[in-house]
Each structure stands twice: as C-alpha cells, then as structure tokens.
Image 1 (cartoon, rainbow, N blue to C red):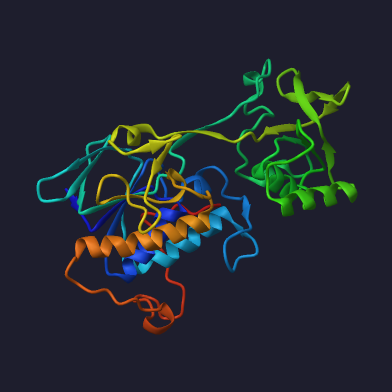
Image 2 (image 1 turned 90 degrees about the vertical axis):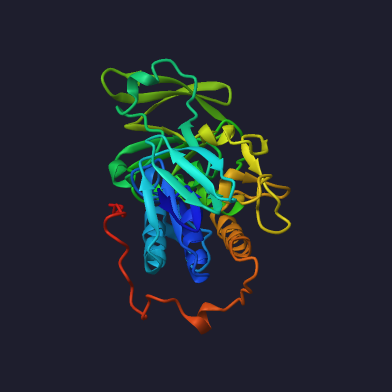
Length: 350
C-alpha cells in the first residue's frame, strides 16, 4: 500500500504543478497516470507543439514545459505510478481514500485530486473513403515530430487552435503548406487567425476556405487530395494530410466513481476550492467543469493552487497555514541552480 497526503490522478501539467504547490505546504504527493511517462498530452501527443499562453514564456514547446515542471517539483520527491489506470476509489471508515489501479496497485491518502485532463482520447477522423488505407502512410492525426514534414508538401485540415498553431509552426518547415477549412470563420484564437492570414498574404501558405477534403489519391502512399472549394473541385499533390478536428474524450473508470458529471466533465465548486460532490475529492484542470470554465493550462495551475490550500485545511484542520511568498521563503532543494528531475520517472522529450 502506497500512502501519501494527496493522490493525484493524472500527471499532465496541472497534476505536476499541484505537486509544487502541495510541496510548499509540506504535503506529499503521489501521481497515477496511464501513460508510461509524466506529461499527459503534452508529452504523448504533441511534445513539439508550441504553447503561447504560459506566463513569462512567449513561446514554449509542450515537451519543454513538462521538462521544466519536472525540474520544478524535483525537490519535493513525488511518487509516480505510471502505465496504470486508476480503476476504483473507496472511502474508508477513518476518512481516507484507497485508489486501486487496473494492475492492483493500491494507494491511500486523505485527499484525492483528479487531474485527468480530457481522460482517454481518440482523434476525430473525417469520413473519407480509403482513409484507413493511408494511416501512417501519409495521413497523420497527431504531429509528434515536425521535422518529419521538412521540405515536404503538407495539407492541414481544421479550424481550431491546433490547426492554426501547426500551420504557423510548419510554415517555416514544409516546402508547401495548405490549410483547408470548411468555413470562412475559424474557432481558434484571434491572434492565431491574424498570423495565418498574414502568412497567406506573404505567400508562405495556401489558405482554402470554404473548402473540404472529399477524396484521397495514391497507391501505397498518399499522393494527393481532392478538395471541394467554392463551386469547383481541385486536386492537390501532397506528401502528408493532417486532419486536426480535435479529440473525442472519454472519462473511463472516473465516470463510475459517483461523481456529479456534466457533459463528460466533473462538476466542482469553483467558489472556493474545486471540490467535487464527494468531500475530499477534487477535480482540477480540463477534467472539471463550472460556470465560466476555460480549458487552459494556466487555469489548471490556478485551480491546483487553491485545491492544495483546501487540502491542507482538510488534512490539518487545527493547524494554521500562513501564506508565504517563495521570493521570501525560497524553495527547499533549490540553491539557484537547476536541479535535475529523478531520471527514474522522466522520459526525456526528444
């Protein structure tokens, strides 16, 4: 039985930052994640994707963000159970929680923080004939290594942030880059839309709107796409087609834990501490929902901070916690130089 102060289910950015905030309060954390390394989607799906809305980082790659978070929490020596799903939660008579994984590993703590992001996820695929024939042969749903597309002809389809961000990023890498979207308007950040429009004006990318991919061409590897654009149909030669239509999330076992749910997310009280309908169980990050919720990493960081303050009061109801700024109190384990994260739990993002 692994015992700790806070069991964190999910080792993405929000879960990792919760370790730091808990550590400042001298609370121990143990994280459970189904992936074989910490980092969540940032490490598994888009380690090379640039992120623009992390404070003090005009631009940071998702993988680098995870590396930095791991260095930040290293002084607090968190425990990790990786490659295992949190399967069940049972509350004991002495107000503790026991979380058991699909491999039978048991964890006990007075507080559980669910930071499972979107849960398990699968890419949303366009309804196209022969699509599966070209998967890993020119059709990619996730961009892990942008260098794969260097000096290649690439077509991206989609109108959200991922499609816009990757269009901007790959514009300096691909030999030819085309963004296809079925509407004139985009769903992504306005600043990203402006950047894409500027790239079009500079002739660095092609932008086809309103347009839709209607066919794929090629023998053993993707060679071209048939695109319906306005009232005509055109054929575009390409090496890679990347449809970025988002992910379909599933909560998995979390949905069976007696938590109040709304639209595949866990309802929490955002007026104070992001606690669920079960006292002692919190939900932070993309996995939760409340009025005005924004699914941003920086919002998850804020939620993790307030959750840890509430967890301290729950664990030590008679102990007063005085907020201390790290600029005054410092962080034990840091001497001004970077401290490496434990190599046994970190997979370097190449």
